[in-house]
Amino acid sequence: MVDEPEASDSLRTFGAVLQALREHAGFSREEFGVLVGYSKHTVASIELGRRMPDRAFMERAEEVLGNTGALRRAFPTLARQPGLAAWFRRWARLESEAITLYTYECRLIPGLLQTEAYARTLFANQLPPLDDEQIEAQWVARAERQRLLRERPNTAFGFILEEGLFLRRTGGVEVTRELIDHVLEIAELRNVEIQVMPTVQESHAGLDGPMQLLETPENSWFVYCEGQRGGLLVSEPKEISVLQRRYARMRSQALTLDDSKSLLERMRGAL
Image 1 (tube, rainbow, N blue to C red):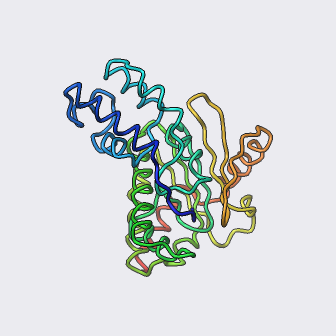
Image 2: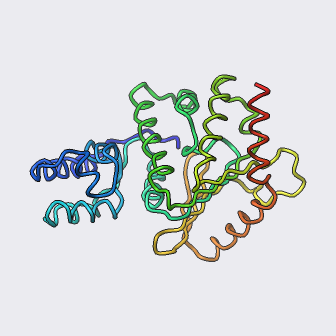
Image 3: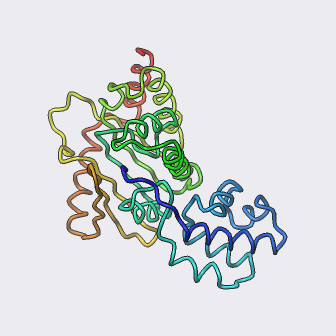
């Protein structure tokens, strides 16, 4: 994502209305979070306009706060998320509700798996340069997205990562060491599978580039492919079928889960 973060009046307004309704009802953020089934940190992020609420949150909030209809009417107007590039926002919204999310990446560690140090290294090296406020906004948005891995335990996350992403040592040895530790930690989650595609691989179904495949609660599939200055959201079933087959082939070509873990541990030990 290379666009500058944009202000999000719609998110801030939605958040302010939510906060006013919550306080009028006499609930603390923690109490309200228990009632709607989300953490107090998620509630705070939505109220501050930093996070795009998903439809399930909105519907539960409406029920808890008396079915005023205010949140339900405002929800369709939410279109902008701070720190996210314009072309990525629709995908981010789908991502927040997905029941399955598969990612193949050959350029950099995916945002959901990045450490703060790794992410800030990427932001600091963007061209044209970002200022401190823009970098902070992008990190806040990325950190909020990463909550999906732990806050959606029923969503199946799969990642296929090229070995070279770790060999590049983006940010230096210490950043890479922390990154590998973090990826190994995430790999222990029951809903996350991480495979490494070895650098030496004579047959590779993903040579056309990175991709993300997503399944919605309604069992519809979407694909997102990102390039230098833009992204493509694919909804055509025939195109999605082709990319699903390629991803399935890559799963058989990459190292197994256990072998991927062993390789990462060896790479960590060699740093």
